Image 1 (spheres, rainbow, N blue to C red):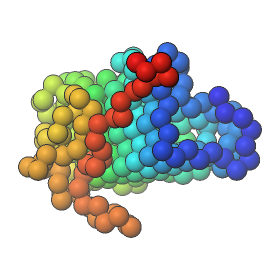
Image 2: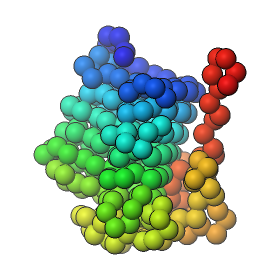
Image 3: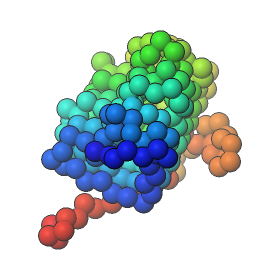
Length: 239
């Protein structure tokens, strides 16, 4: 749980290992008035890696469930500010991101792997989604959905890839219920070894150099293609 902080919170180069706890970072009451910024962090949690009622800015972070039944790796409740995810990995759980924000959520250059319901869900009448250059690998190609609009509107959705852990293609309707972007693909992204937490792209991946160029980084590949394995979890007793 986080204390009152009018200027918000910034965490950089941190590892949060909460195997036996429900939350890694918890701010249900919106105590960080200016939101939460995460840079190059790794989070493990049983239920939620991040549970906040405010904006989240996350760059090059990994969120991993230690229990397959984890409701959502990142939950954003009531918020009237934009949230932004770039270069992140969402590994496991029921949902990768569940946002109830009434503002814009932008997700880019990220990889979602082995979610059992939705990789990304937005659910507010005023919610707006922008997503591109993402890889969505759902658990079950017959039931699980990459991007779910429960409420709100899609502002932009294109240049992303959908596949399944079962190594079979989800249908376009299952991957993108609101419609597949003209430049999005349904194909095996050829991750190096996602089962061992290595989410880089193989040299022959169809996601290499097939994304849209992003402002600043100039990235043109889909997914969190630079992300190597999660850091080894080391406890204070050395185990």
